[in-house]
Length: 428
Length: 198
Image 1 (cartoon, helix red, strand yellow):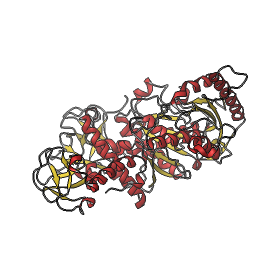
Image 2: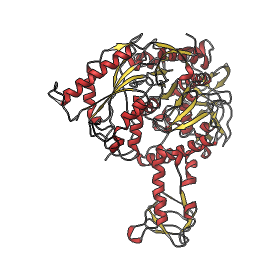
Image 3: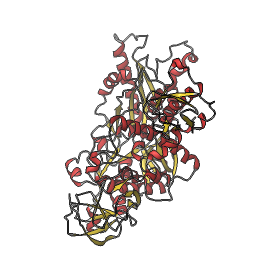
């Protein structure tokens, strides 16, 4: 396989996906169990060259009683993940009184009466996503069912069977890397993350951006302290203004929060492991966005906003917390997320593979079932290899392999379906 | 871990390196630069725990400490080569502190005299407006109540004052400012491109 091509699924809505999943998505948290009941029949169903495609179910804590724009964020995230390029088709499971997706129209009902209620379904249809919908509080009980819940579950299974059959027919084709979005993140860090793993990932990011791929990074709270470093990668005034406003706000909130918690950053744990200043800590994390001064930050995006395909480095506003950051980037359309770790973490995503990278040998040896790639940093000292060579030799091909479906990421093997939408405040 | 006892330097311009294992006081250790290999040796004159930084050259007082090719702070005293560099001798330079980025937009004014907690703030009497939206307020307008004692000449910002009590009457402009502040906080989280302060 040439290094600038991967094998991917081409969809009629003119996107390439690296997986061909069927997604069962509850539109509100109340029906998580119903979605799970539908999914149980398909728990072990796999298809594709190495069995990389499956029926995935998302269990989440959103969809009802959101206040203000939190609802829009939840909506945007669910819409983003349901229309994700890695998803062949979606089964929406709604309760009927949820905030984001109310019951389907009954015949003769005026569609204009409550447009909001149908937005999620409508948007998916408009985007050309294969979508089915079952509703638990359905009024008309079909003759063959004695119970509404049973009806919803059986109907759901019927729809999913239909989607799986279609999905099994799709084959991979050769696709250029510049049609993909790659997310990067880091979490459960230790000193090896800042010294080796993140700078190594930075070299891969430089390479990907040069090949025309889009790369997105996030975790706003973790870049605080390294703002000036970020601004060196910003050319346009528009992006600089956006970034400045975003970081100012984040800094105010973080300052207030730390004051309230009577904590400091770097934390006592950071200081014990040799980190002296906030800038040093943040730089260790920010180096993953690349070293090439010629590559600029193309845009700053809100949480779960669609990442433009066609190349460039993008910054998404998301919390430092791993699952929420990954969820935001995946909802923004990241086909795959590359995640560096020092201590090891099993984190994954329902629709995109999460490739975990470490430069800590003992973590790799102890937690082999969590970690995809070990960067052999001892080669630096023994063979005189540079960090860039090690990264491009060990990490880059692994990313392409996972994307092409030649191998599964550890997160997929473990069946990780971590999904958490960023929240802002208490619910009504 | 199979890492050698070297001092690891990430970028050529760094003046500190990282110990990849515990270094013993008085011994000489190689300095390894990423991409170029061993570039020299240095005698460590204080014990250096694993992952801690060591000065590779003499760093004068108030000079930048450079790691990752970027200043991570300034030295508070002269640091000899081979000395451990940590919170004892380096601090975050105020130039790089994120608070600096914040201050500009959130200071409302200056205290003209010492203000006690609970004292009413009035334009011209004990409060000199600095924020653009407060500057047009007529003299003696009530702008809030101090939530904490504020020293003479101290900054009055959203944070150390609270709302004007209702019975004192609302200052419409101040209320608008507070509302905008919270809108800023909220909007900043999601739609930061539309934010307006004041």
